[in-house]
Every structure is written in C-alpha cells, then in structure tokens.
Length: 227
Image (cartoon, rainbow, N blue to C red):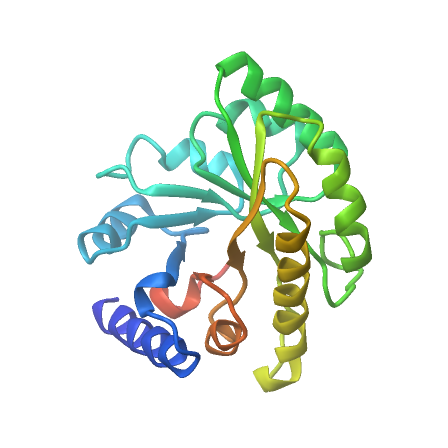
C-alpha cells in the first residue's frame, strides 16, 4: 500500500505540474468499499485523510472504528431514506442528483442545525447505467436547489465510462470543467465551484490534466477486490 500511494502521489504531482497547478491543490480520496477497518487505519497512518464510501451501511459500520477523524465522503448513490443515518457524519456528499434528495437533506440539516456540503453528480457521457443529471439539466436543477438554504453546493462530480485508453474519455472531464466555469460566472447564492470530483484509478491522470482537484481511488491504493 505504501508503494501504491507513493506512485499515485507521484502521478498526481506530474499531472498537476503539467497544467501549472500545485500538487497540494489535488485531494486524494481513498475509496474504501469492502476494505476492512484495520486496512483503512493503516492507510491513515500512511497519510490518507480523506475516505470515500459508496454505501451508508459501510459508513455506519466503520465510522467509530476508523481512527484520527478523517474527512468522510459519500461518493455513491444516496437513497433518500438513508440520509438520516449519515447527515451528521459526512463532510461532503458527491452524489446530489435529484430534488427529492435535496428536500430530504434540507429537512435533516434543519433538524440538526447544520449545513450540508454537496456536489452535483453529472452524467456527462449520458450512460443509462449511471446516476447523475445530464449536462443540460444542471443549471435548471441548481436554480431549484438554491431554494434550500441548508444545502451548500461545492462543485460537480462525474464518473467517466471505463476505457482501455483514457484519452478516449478526456472529453468527459473537459466538458465538466467547462460546465463548472459557466456556473462560476452565474454566481448563484450558496453555490461555488470549489471542487471538481472526477478521475478514478484508471483515468485520474487525464482527469487532473483537465481540471480535477478531487480524485477517487480505490483499486490503485488497495488492489483489486472481489465484490
């Protein structure tokens, strides 16, 4: 794992410098789906401080057992009826993609007197098998979301299609970056394009070159897992 992380940090540095950015501007999120708590704690000892989970039950199982209070990210599809279990545990939700979820986040945030930080999930490639709004639906969606004052939009997230050659999906990351620039200009209240969460084990170098500042890596750190 130490060698894997060193390789990833080196690649992040190279990709960031290639585009004139500092490697410190890129957040590495360790995706810990199916990873045991002792392995997560080992990763934290090696300097990982952002944990990404895609299932609520995994967050609840691990939350109190993971040491040193990392930043927790909900990166998977979030069912509305599960919001109440994690509303006070998650630092950033990457998968806001529908009004029913926004309404529930607003309701639970009010109950806890907190703000919810969220990214809007965008399905740039318009894959039927994936969640997320199509690109042309994002601006109308945001114009609804700003009616919910407890939700702070911090940026956008996408999952690119898998490709043997990541160059084939460079356009996905480029289009998300362009969308974020358009949203910056509009200056909606409670909306900032602070984060672009894009890039996984197979394509994170290309994603960083196209503007990503959050990459979600599981296999690259922990190795292949059987689900």
